[in-house]
Amino acid sequence: MGFRSRRLAVGAVATVAGTLALGLPGTAQASVRAVDYTALGDSYAAAPGVPSVVDAACGRSDGNYPSLTARSHGWRLTDVSCSGATTADLTGSQNGLAPQLDAVNAGTDVVSVTIGGNDIHFTDDLATCAGLTSSDPAGAPCKTHFTADGTDRLAELVDQTGPKVSSVLRDVRRRAPHAKILVVGYPALFPDDGTGCTSGTVPLAMGDFAYLRDTTKKLNGMLARQARSAGARYVDTYTPSIGHDMCQPEGRRWIEPLVTAPPVAPAHPNARGEQAMSAAVDRALRCVRHLW
Image 1 (cartoon, helix red, strand yellow):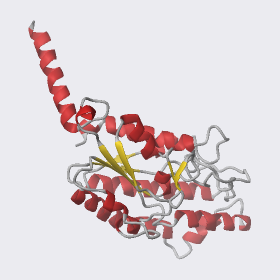
Image 2 (tube, one colour; image 1 turned 180 degrees about the horizontal axis):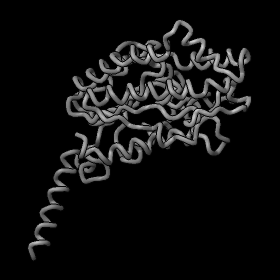
Image 3 (tube, helix red, strand yellow; image 1 turned 45 degrees about the vertical axis):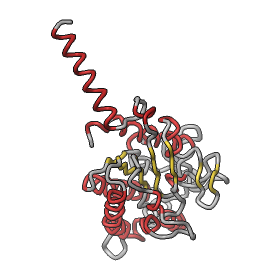
Image 4 (tube, helix red, strand yellow; image 1 turned 90 degrees about the vertical axis):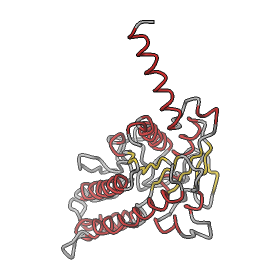
């Protein structure tokens, strides 16, 4: 064996050893010990309206991104994500359920967290915006409403949520000191270029689309900063979902519009959206050796 061959062989052994030590998906590690994956979060993780429902109380689907990710890697999944969850519901009881963080322990290998949208009351905010549309359909009545006192109340809520997310991530790390922690952000609900759509299924004033887009970006920016501060990995689901927002036609959109028929959840990812979120998680996992 020449020098180059020996060097390649040594490199291959080192790569395999490093991969096994990190417990990456799709390696011999899986045959030694199953990877324990715990999913925490709100409805964007639970995926209400996406077939098939496995927990009606939380609107949790077996087609959500945690389930898709776990199945693709052969991981053991503990999914406690629940629609309506806030950061407080991760440490406290939601509808009589145990705190979501109780599902995280020293044996947990991977944790994903999607949280923060309900802390800023984004679903209610969208309902408020839709209700204001008729007053100025060509203007920005929603933005005017939330900035009437000279400050952006939604931006303030995002800032106030940052320390809460930080506390959650510290608690995850305390409970699972060796786990890979993924903070999964929110996809693009609205056109990224700031333009609107006139469809009756998205009853928002034309000038408010850019404001709501910016609010989504502020929320994701905060989550990314908190992830970095906690030594976690932020998973960007926004960028790959550009062009698949609620204004797009059926078959192209990954986010359902504000007016839709049950069981689909309005302003939430559909099955394609959850698949895209799982793909974003997979991309983050492929970079895991460079990040932890």
